[in-house]
Length: 239
Image (spheres, helix red, strand yellow):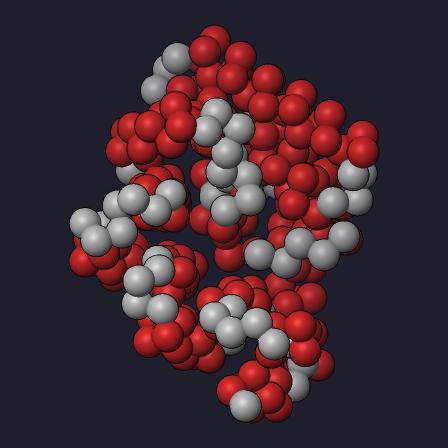
């Protein structure tokens, strides 16, 4: 927070942190503050759109996106949040179209955006869902190798561990997916609401070990909420 205080315009980052803590009302306030300070940037409304998705208000997220699509079409965030909206709401044909367009611009992109969904992992999964199994498996295997290569130099990186687990889950590599997902959580990954919506993990949802990992994430977030002086931090941020 001390770092953010001296850098005006990072209210959306604070909103992201609050959303991860499930402090949704305060997160929304931070995103609206971003909209007021930087109406020319997409960060505020994209954060709000993601927040709607996390709350399963897909219609509200779609409405928010449609209001901003035209004015912010030149930002990568705009199609990225649209792709994720269709991905999480299981509108796979539209998600595949947008992810394919994004991958043409940046074949290795997407993994650092909300939900840690690389374009290749999404496309590979979506190919599987449209009965192009060989193509999907090939894309996913290449994406998995890329993540494993990154783990050799950053073995405790929570985002890479999570991305690896998601690809392995899509490939039905159950045991490896659970190992990497558990490791991601141990290293600090707490975005359980994206995990809950992510279709790449659908094959694991009935697994007892997956449920235990998921519950541990919710417990950790609840603990962080109790131990974080959110009101005091926000008061400091506004000064």
